[in-house]
Length: 220
Ligand code: DC
Image 1 (cartoon, helix red, strand yellow):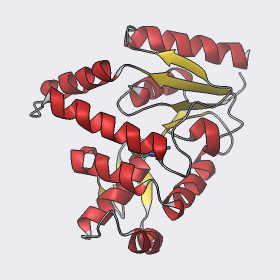
Image 2 (cartoon, protein in one colour):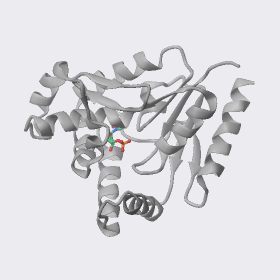
Image 3 (cartoon, rainbow, N blue to C red):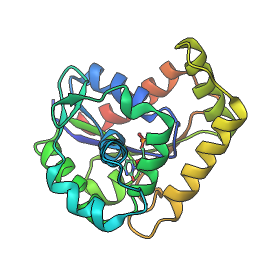
């Protein structure tokens, strides 16, 4: 079967990575979490006490940032395992902030394209279908209502035993969407040739089945 490239874009906490991982597993494709790469840059800034607002310093430091996405799903930043550290709320907000800088985007987009070479890949993010993989054979724009996204995140936190405030989560998601959709360079938007899937009233398995059908239409 032909190996294609799949792009999944959409707003924060829309369940893109969950779907992307399940589809990648079904197809034996490589999954690339591009949001994790922006999170690594934000985490690096936090750790080195560089303000997210300091574009010049962050841009200069990129040469010292080495990100490794390991096959077992762990993410290493300069050899440190940061897989769970980059999920902290402060890092989410920071990633959304530093992702507006042109040097940061250029640095990470180049890496993403290198990793995606040869196909058989599924990438999720904000600009995959519009910038990173403009020629992807399948582009999905995954959305869900803000209430639904916040509630899912809230339930996830509770299941993991993390303290959670539904109202605060909803506000954070709204702030991130606003930043990601209104930045100057590569803002989040649906590519003209992307297929929109509203997952608000769908189960995980329904979304995966729908995406799998779209893949099969393209590889057969
Ligand atoms: O997908 P995520 O929530 O882990 O992404 C964190 C932030 O990184 C997101 O708010 C905006 C930025 N991002 C981006 O600008 N482009 C991408 N392709 C992926 C993420």
